[in-house]
Amino acid sequence: MNIIRDKEFGGERPLFGSRDLRLENVTIREGESGIKECSNIVATNCRFEGNYPFWHVHGFTIKDCYFAVGGRSALWYSDHLKMVNTVIDAPKMFREMNDIDIENVQINDADEIFWRCERINVKGLKLKGGTYPFMFSRGIFVDGLESDSKYVFQYVKDVEIHNAKITTKDAFWEVEDVTIYDSILDGEYLGWHSKNLRLVNCHIAGEQPLCYAHDLVLENCTFDPACDRAFEYSTVNADIRGGITNIKNPLSGKIVADSIGSITLDEYIKQPANCLIEERKK
Image (cartoon, rainbow, N blue to C red):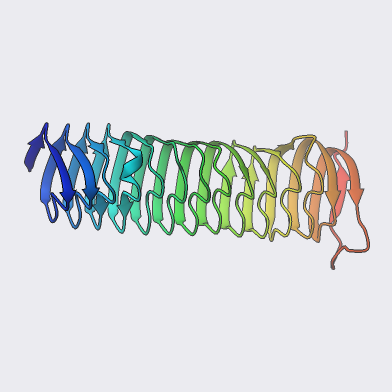
């Protein structure tokens, strides 16, 4: 493997078409497409300041690196990436990619990241700001996520999440085959129009959660007292520990809680309107 160490590059496509290349303490200055159409690249302790540095790259490792604001849209149309101990201040990262392995990464502008990606493996990820992370992606495994981004995980499929703390709005809309374990989900309108969404040992906060959901499952979950109008027009099987403030117009299934503040079944309820709702027997 060729090694480039302690160098700076700028301008248009300075390392275009490189193969079997190791970059150590290299800075990609202002310019475009610094490492485009490359393969088998390792970047360690590098800094990326120019636009679009990693496009159409096949097989690469990024470790202990930094992406400045100017390094926007840095990773597109690429595959087989391992990224470790890296800080990103640039938006619009990870687009149309597959086979992504992320460990101990912090993204400080999570605007439109991980769009239309497949096979994402995450261990320790922090997302700050931005909108629509992970939209239209599939095959995602997460263990350890902190996020305050809005509209996270929209239109995703085949997702498993562990140990997440997500503060958001309109999260998990129109998802399919998603399971979330041991997590805190705080945001308005959680999980609307979802299919096969399963929550296990989770705490749920925010207004009007889990409406219009199909085949929704909750196991050993808790609700914040501010949650109201839950489960409207959903088919649901829910085991709720503690209390829930209000349940409104579920379609069918079964909801069991330690205590239920109120149940709203009004003229707008949809058929079959046969959901069993009951407090757990003491």
